[in-house]
Image (cartoon, rainbow, N blue to C red):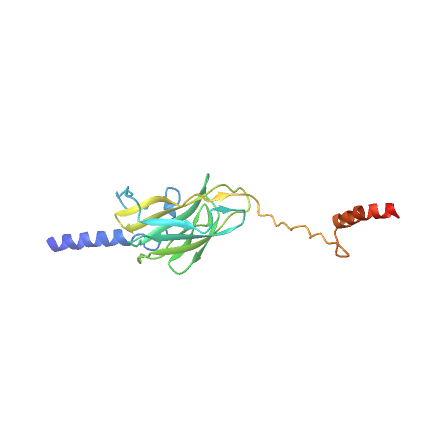
Length: 197
């Protein structure tokens, strides 16, 4: 009897730990809460950070986003760029530990693809060409089945407008090696001499 009970408990725990190891967590796109039974997000300060290579962006710009563990690694994650209306922009994965997810639009989120412990994840995010606003990158980090953090945010990344290519006006050139001001000064100096003659 005890052996059957232990096997059942082991099987249930194994299923719980590996349920989302493939990172296909599109059901968590909106609230970003993993479906880990009755476990709730930790209220402790997260041991993870999200950083970006810029603090401002323009339409169509690509931004490098880094998820970093301070000490203890994470097994799972879900990353999005969030504007006022939800996920925005599209990601490109960097490295072998992540994959794209479709949260409202294709490639609008990144998640893990295995439950191997990770300490750093890097992704590239490309801003849309229309309807841009200030954004924050937001992530869920899963350390284990019962310990996870939801809504960890980057510093704000502000939208600063259209990316216009501007050209500087051509430099002014003068001929003869002298400027108009120098020529005028020379004329004024010679005027008294001409009056004497």
